[in-house]
Length: 207
Image (tube, rainbow, N blue to C red; front, side, top):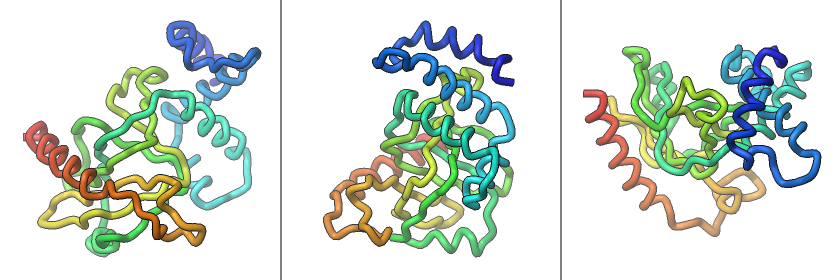
């Protein structure tokens, strides 16, 4: 599988030199990391995520490490992105306002509307460190992926079938006990306004 996609990834790196990094000899590591990202995106990423989320020991660990390193090499994405998933009423209710949520695996969202299950719950998230993957996998131009261990704050729970609104927290906003720190960054109101505008735009595009 590595050999099957290494040539394609190598061509992408030649067209986007910034992916290789600046240190001498780093190109080989970059190729390995970015091939891992491509394999993760095109393969059974759900299985890898389940193992990472469970903190299981196994052969997925070196792959996940390379995926994380490869994602860090990709361009960042800041703004609203949509995640659509099935959720029960109890699961929707769990996302109450002010709750902190940490995703321990990699997770995918999209910067534009896309079809989902008819009974899907929409989570609209304001990102600051998500990564664009279109350079490595142009078949999904609007896809963004965030790294494992990212923490979010629920700004607004689901209301009247509306989306759950969340924002990514920066490390400076999280205390050592995993809770929101005393020194809060005054961005929630700004990000909530941006999410409201994005939600309206996504609804218009879906119509």
